[in-house]
Each structure stands twice: as C-alpha cells, then as structure tokens.
Image 1 (cartoon, rainbow, N blue to C red):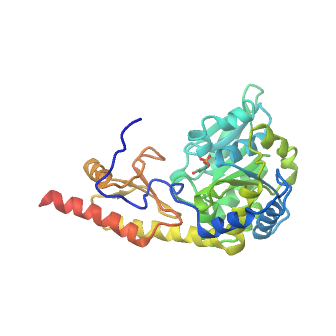
Image 2: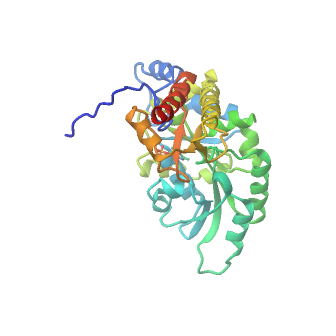
Image 3: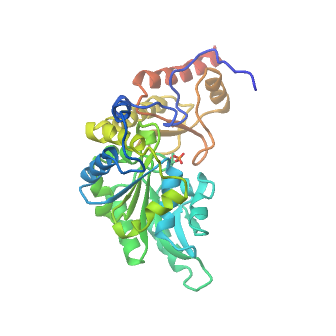
Length: 356
Ligand SMILES: *Cc1c(COP(=O)(O)O)cnc(C)c1O
C-alpha cells in the first residue's frame, strides 16, 4: 500500500470530472424509496416501468428503454445492435467510443470498425461523413452503416439544431443509421434550450445513450431506441454483456428521482452556469488561453506549465490528457460559483506571487 498523500489544502470539489461528484438529493431519495420489502427482479418492477415512462414522457414518443451500468456498455451494445460485424461506424476522432472505451464497440459488435473523422471543436462535419462513405464502395472496405455523434461533445461544445439537421440529411441520403452518445445530453438540452425531441428523434437520431452518472445519479445510462426495430433482442445483448441488473429497481429509481422532479435540468443548468463563469473568470487572466468555445459544462484551457503545477500543489485536481490537449476543467451539478472563484483567485495569486 502506498502512503496517503495529503495536500496542504483539502478541496471539497474539483474540476477533474463531472463523475467526481456525488449523488444529487432527488436521486438519493428515490433510491431510498425503492429500498423497501421485496420487489420483482431483472426489470420486472414498478420503478423500472416508471423510469421508462418518465423517459417516454420527456422525449414525447413511445421509445424502447433499457438501463445499463455505464456509458461504455450503453454505447458499445447500442452500436453492436445497429451493425453487422462487417460494417463500420463513423465517429469524430476525439469521440469517447474511439478514444475512451478500450475497443468496447468493436468487441461487442464482433469487429465492426470505427472510422474516425476530423471536425472543428469536437463536432462531426457532414462533408467528412459524405467523403468517408463515398471514398470506397467496393467489397474490401468495411461498409459504413452508422454515424455516431456526441451531444454535448467531448470538447464541451454542442450541436445546434441546424447542424443536426445537416447531419441527419446526410445520414438519410447515404442510408446510414444515426446514434447519439448523450453522456452529457442534459447539458446539451439546457445549453440549446430545445426540447429533448428536437435534438434527437425529430433530428433523425435512431438511438440515444442518455447518461445519468454525470448528471447526478450514482450509476447508470439509459439506452433509448426511438427506432424500435433496432432494439430487437437488445435485452439478450445486455444480459450476455453482464449489463442486466438483477436488482434493476436501483438502477431505475434514481432516474425517476432525476426526471420527475426536473432535477436533471436543474443539475445541468448549474454545471453549465459554473462553466460559463469559469470561462469569464479565466478570460480575464491573460496567461490563460481558452481552447474551445464553452457551451456546456467544460472549459478547455492551456495554462503555462508552472501555473498548472502550482494549481495541483494547491490541491486542485484536473486532467490534461483529455480532448485536444491542454487542461479540461469540468463543472458538476454540485459545483458552486464560489468553487469557480476560488480556483480563479488561486491562479491570480500564483501569478502575483511570481512577480512579487
Ligand atoms: C463519461 C462518458 C461516457 C461514459 O463513460 P463510462 O465511464 O463508461 O460511464 C460516454 N461518452 C462520453 C462522451 C463520456 O464523457
């Protein structure tokens, strides 16, 4: 066992990831309410039905809903169910499915290949999709079958409706299916101020992996099939992959807590607002460079190396290996404006200290 490294300052909250945060009160109390007597297992229970119905209500459509333990499984199994093994999936080169799922989509689809494309600020460009599909049409190439995009993106930007419509038009014309990784879908809904349906099935999305973990629950993603045919035997895929919770009510109940109370939007709004404030604060510091437009709950920045080191020494945790280089500062549902100001004040102090 290594020794416990203690920092001079103990921080309650960090900017490392929105999954550093705990469980929001609404999700926690729903978990507690689900913890009573005996309830049927494997999803045959009232909590699972209620959570699925709540999702159908917010998306205003009779979709098929499944709950998985995490986003990697949700994305991998959803893509597997949309493809044959000889197909390929077009994604952004910084997409989580490409860079952070350890080959899960390829593994669960028995070899379906990911075809990464570039795109400004984390967004897939429709022309790149078209080029990727049209560059080959012979039998030796893995046949493009799905476009997957991330909303909000891995660089903290969002796809506005007109961009989604252009992608949707491209997808339809080229005969592709449309998948959305919504690990931070709630942040995108709030940022765009659109109804969930406008940025999903109305924009041609067939399947959405809706993340709950980063929005304030303990564990879980919902896989939502707007195109119900693509859900064929998906229950078997979940079971085989070890993603069928026997005490399903505890995966489902937190969603009831999030959705019925509106906490999912409140939580996303709080983290988005904090990112906006962080953006403003950092823009006022000339030594800090903002690397991407701040539209959801993350801020990508380039710090001079010594500032980054001093911030870590002062107990702030954040990563600098994610996305397009620089540091990623992530705000969570429980990040406060005081956390943001304390962070910015520390940077100013570091800079003043140097010149003193
Ligand atoms: C966090 C995240 C996921 C899900 O990751 P898990 O750790 O498997 O839950 C998926 N996509 C994106 C863009 C993410 O940020």
